[in-house]
Length: 228
Image: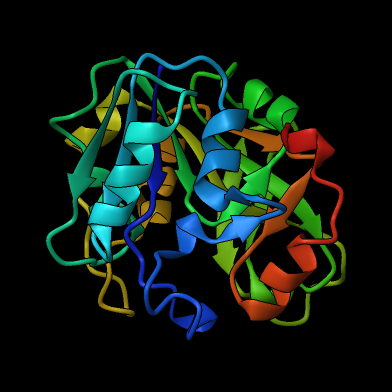
């Protein structure tokens, strides 16, 4: 299995801190966010990091990290969504499956291990504000039924998509379409694969999103033991 980390974004909600450093390299308790993510990965054949904004900083970090020796970067020429970032890696993937993670979320090591054990799947976490997330609905057998983006009026808690996936290599055969946000969404790839066969819903016990300044500050105080 290969791993792809999506690290091309500009981190606008974390400005001014991201004016001179890419969000994946912001420190959390003394380590870059990206270092936590790579360190928590299960064994992978190859690591692919999608970069764009301040890409040279991320590439410099990757040369110094010791978690994964076989790594490369893919430069997303113009960030056009998570689906576009995934498809940009088509020529870099070497395995029959690939784990895809956001570059700004800390997920427990045990959770990533369980995700890596399914042939295809999506990682979810229970949230109390379903209207702020893509909400995942599972069939009785634990496979994906559908995802609804930011639904209104659902009772809490619900299971949210937290940006962790395992795809078969056939994901790169799909053709994605522009969403209403004028981006290519990785969730379209999820939906198409779920229509074709079982796509497992894997519940994560630990998730620490770092999407804005408040979350970043809070991450300095949280227990990150599950990620170690």
